[in-house]
Image (cartoon, rainbow, N blue to C red; front, side, top):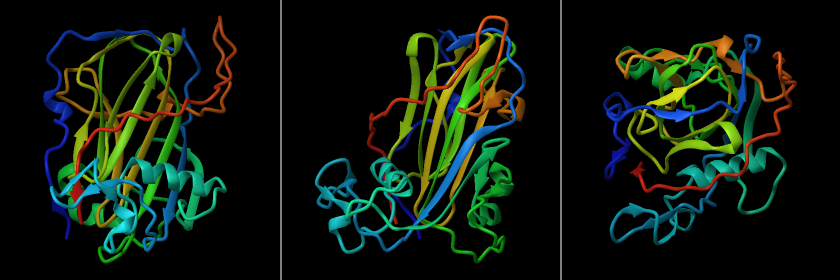
Amino acid sequence: MKLILGTFLLSVAASVAAAPVPFAPEFSGSFAAGHGADARFVQIDGRWGGSTVLWNEATKTFGSGDPIGSFSWGTGLWGLNDWRAALASANGASGAGYPPIVAQWSGIAPVINYGNATYNCLHSSLWGPATLVPLFTDTGCGAVQENWIAHFKGYIRVTEPGAYSFGVLNDDGFFFRLVGAGGATQEVVRDFLNPRDRNGFGDELLLDVGLYGFELGMWNRLEAGVVDLRWSTDGGETWTLVPTTSLLSANAVPTSSTWMLVFAGLAAWVPVQTRRKRA
């Protein structure tokens, strides 16, 4: 059973208060409709004991103390550091600091709305159903589908200017980064293990027509896991999945009257905030 420890980010449903923050697109102009974003899913061996996420046993908090992998119970994924290690391992890195890979899948995600069987069985009635992660085939409520990560990247296409809120339904943790003009960024991270919630930027963003680069990473340790990207244009009253036509692959070469673009990739990103949950 998951034990919740400490506080977590406020729900984005209550975050819209200040005036929208102007945020110009990375590439302005009208672009052809997208067909989905790049997606990758990786499952690691849950017995891996190399986590570098820090745990303070005296205070029962994350972010200081000793690596969780040094504790007998500290196996599997515990936070952003382990997400990075799992992705590096899937890319060919090896050694004690990189977890063994059980399965991986890459392709195009028409929408970003994925979860495991446990999530759909226990929580879809409250949060909405999710597409089963492509790593898994068993949809039964007893399926054990744990210690996996997701990685999405590409462009978000905006066709109507206005104030937008973004929200990521997540369990156990995530980061989301939006890239605008001149490499400016808006980003949010919910590190470590957390209770299920929809979280996002603290303010609405005033977006213009064009393309915004994005990267979204998510990790699940035990039990239910989900990642779901939505936006709202009514101050957080209504949340809808970012549609397929508004998601473009990082490898796409979109055209407009003024641009021929090649996506160069998102830079490495490191902010970490202390949020916690322990199994």
